[in-house]
Amino acid sequence: MKPTLLILAAGMGSRYGGLKQIDGIGPNQEPIIEYSIYDAIKAGFGKIVFVIRKEFEVAFRERFDPFSERIQIEYVFQPVNVDVEGLSLIQREKPWGTSHAVLVAKDVINEPFAVINADDYYGTNSFQLMSDFLIKSCTENCMSMIGYTLKNTLSDHGTVNRGVCKVDEENNLVEVNERIKLAMKNGVVKYNIGSDEPEGEEDPLSSVSMNYWGFHPSIFKHIEDGLFQFMKNNSSNPTAEYYIPDIVTQLIQAKDSVFNVIPTEDNWFGVTYKEDKQMAVDTINSHILNGIYPSNLWS
Image (cartoon, rainbow, N blue to C red; front, side, top):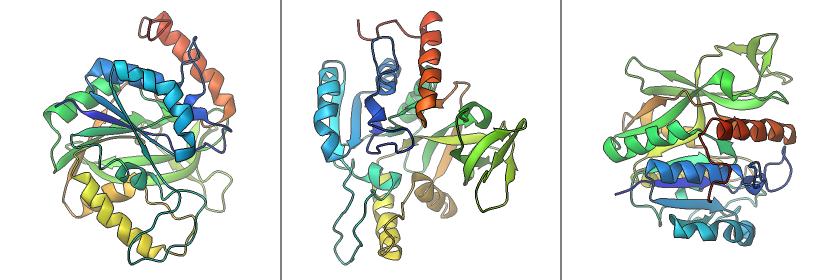
């Protein structure tokens, strides 16, 4: 069975401005998502599932329905407010986080699947690495994460948040340390820049999570159970979010699963800020010149 690619696209991107998930960066206005779809098809994925907000549906269908001629396309919706039996939850303005975003796809995914962000570029080889893992090695007790090099994931235009990974001797994930407000400062990677917390330093060669995960469908039950408890504990908190690293950490600590960190030499980039867009355009143009992509993806 071919694996599925789950694309998280429900966020608006407040620092960037606008619906950045379908903002064009390619020579024919291809958004980053299309390069991910291209790489996924090439790597052997069999289905694309978009997690979006209901109000994005028309825009996404106009852009991506035509791809159903090349690969199966599905859409699922992440609501901002949810009703959970037995819980009284405060009204929210943002959804319940990335773990919740994964969970809303449980009815359309029955096979091993990868998870990525819509507005991030992950690299051609990373898709092949993930596809090979999902087809050959993914089980209920063995899942994965693509590991990128910290220094290759920073922005020149502001601070970013990153999950810095600690791994064991078998390259399995031990924990993800969430670092906020990271940037290169005087040649050193610092975190907590400009925050009320003391600044710290990270190894620029550290492996980081860029939200590229490889899951067995059994993960849905774990998320469902964990999210219920999280909502119960945060019923009156309008900003609490249940992130993917939260559920991964719980599974690791409970020794229910191992998560293999698959190292990649691909360079990751995202468009956190408007100023990042030109870098993204330049990188894609460079890949076209080097023969990684055709000048028109779908010609």
